[in-house]
Image (tube, rainbow over all chains, first blue to last red; front, side, top):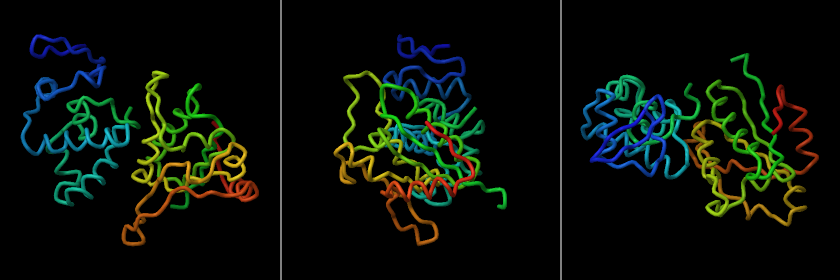
Length: 110
Length: 135
């Protein structure tokens, strides 16, 4: 599949993960979010930006339990828990937020 | 927790040129979800996987060496490196990147994950395992 953003075509795999990391920008993120039925707000951007930073540092998209633990460490337990993150991203904080962040599918997700 | 087994992933090949090193690391990350007692061993050319300052732009493949630093997040905290393999290649521990984990049982103190061991110690480590996967 592909996304159309500002007159550009962004290629993605059959599940909607963009193929080329360098294609990503905020507008692409908004378009992916729209197709996921997600409205981006400050809380959701915070998670998406966190994932992008994690990828920058470690070159992987973390598994969900690793993401939750890492968010707990950096933002505190009120955000680093299943309930909060699944409310933001109902189809899975790692899977869905990674997609919006323009990252590959998390390692360990099938 | 009586079903916990000791898994050792043995890495013997250079990081690039074949897919073994990257595949091993991916299996480790995926397998980490199963809450087993996981260790990694680096010997022969496998010790090159942990060297610092890897730069892969010229060979057109992803530099995955930063991912080793995420292993602590996955509760993989034992990376055994064979001293003789380092020495045979003119390397010392200082040529390896720093990899740490936070010890939950010690107020989250940061501790090194890499443990350089002798060939004889590596033999003992292997003898203690339930499962050995070789890459």
